[in-house]
Length: 153
Image (cartoon, rainbow, N blue to C red; front, top):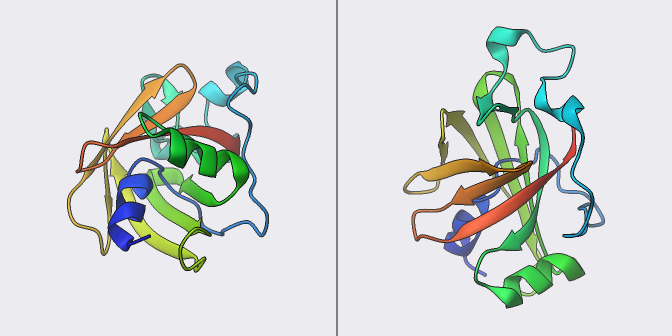
């Protein structure tokens, strides 16, 4: 797929510094994490935490769903499409992805989270972040929403 497709998924998936060799993501039916994820990791100063809707966003997030696009969601389930968003203290973000349906070449974009807005260098437009339950939703400039689940700290 094109870089624009990754922009839409990427802006719906906040970061991922390193693309895993094998897809690492919870199933859509995985239990929601406990309250321990509501707070930043113990090594992060409170002033460096990145919070939205009362949830600390610091950590690694994997795309689990593209809202309204069953084909893309199935490709996420099968590992044909991967999107990972890594959010670091102070809002630094890295979005990585691999689309095995197309070239299979990994892509990565560095960016920044400020409030509910996420931007990436090399991508036009901004994305909007929201939290529903313990899921992170990324609305890209085209109006496409990608849902992410936390997979690590």
